[in-house]
Image 1: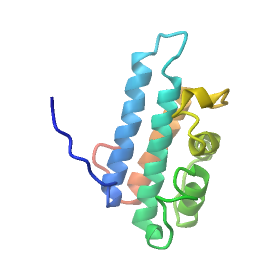
Image 2 (image 1 turned 45 degrees about the vertical axis):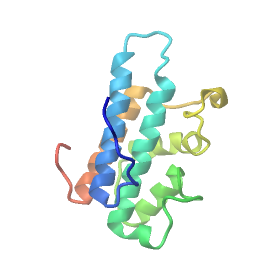
Image 3 (image 1 turned 135 degrees about the vertical axis):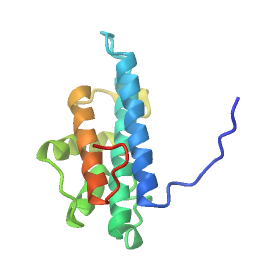
Image 4 (image 1 turned 90 degrees about the vertical axis):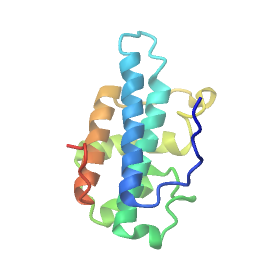
Length: 155
């Protein structure tokens, strides 16, 4: 058994982005473990982690840009709202591909309503494939890493 200390949210953009990448890598591990499954039981946990990866990546950029000093990015109405976080990030200068923006937009309402967190509430969701979503999430986090000049282990 190990002891894991409770820590607050990452306080600087680099740590927050590293946290986002860890969430994305967790999603990739889930997808890889269930790659051959026809039932695809991994799909909700995969999208749950991807949503949090995108949320934390966007918040890392907003911290870097100083937006977190004027907006409470970890509190409603911004907390978990991918589209509002994206809008703020783009207004602050973040440039993302159209496909990355489409993926964020497709997940925003589901992430905000916790539909991937609570399977009984998920109902039917329409999302891009896990492969496409993962690729655009990787692109998004890499774009954020370049924008904040933080490039260790990211392409």
